[in-house]
Length: 290
View: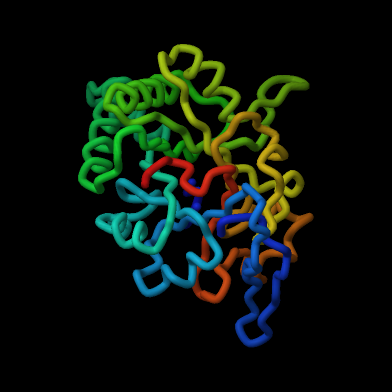
């Protein structure tokens, strides 16, 4: 997701973040969750962590982000074919398809492919990939919308066509987008999810599930296995909240900088070389991908 995903333990963890002097890394810590809590923590990364890492990760995380196509900035998809091994290790899913940046939509438009046609084509590709990976009907497929702020008309047309295409397929549409307010007009701000709801979802015949990324501190609390309440994200009604990213965005995470490693990344408990993003959800399988 944004960077090395842009983003996924069966309950709320007690903070125990530790600094390793030898590795100079601060890792998200592991603790034993209370059995009655209904908040779940997940991870995502552009790169698949490897089969051997899954038992360790499962001790700390309930769900994982799962790419259907090449993640942002990558020329391959190492998650392909890994659904079954993740299932065997007890993971739920946040299923994700990398969307087009505005520049790519404009470039395609110059060749005669409209934003709507491009969105429909990319939706078909995501649907085909989800079927190849054996995700069941009604799995939520999230479109990765990397660029924040108000969407352009072309971006809105692309996203609407993508989500409509997914909704007609038997899968359910979702969007991974920013919940960080940006200036929109004098004295006014907007978030990407707010704009999607106003400009896209209002035209949509089906509900669009939202996975918000908002790592600003506050409301986020940084690289910690004790996530903030889902309701504190600043965006209501979301399926999941990505509250920590690797690397951290320094301009908005100064208040929680000490929770990250000195290099600005968030690392997995017990896996000091594996950077990740952290998300919280009220479900252990937010995409219903099991």
